[in-house]
Length: 114
Image (cartoon, rainbow, N blue to C red; front, side, top):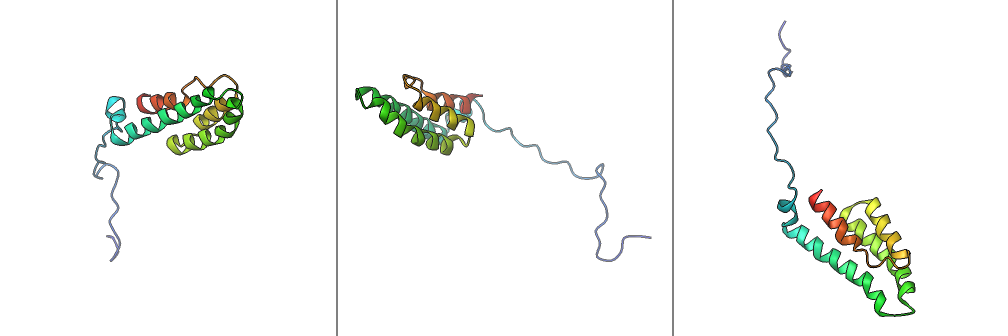
């Protein structure tokens, strides 16, 4: 008996058309040099520079870091969609004398090249 009216014949995996090959996502310089990645780099440099700016205000620097830590964490979450990177950035801003670490820029390098 053949297929009933209105039903589609069964296609086995051996006779099915192969899926088209997809190009791998860009990596390395091909990814890093796109407009959006370069814009993300500018944002990361800005985040790191603003975090370092608290050194220019003796006495209120570490207090400003406590206020800036959530901003850094949220911005990193928005940029990289990673709780890990966000938590590292937040923690780095809270810990005293760690502002010199360019957390956002390092995250951009990881995102772009690894």
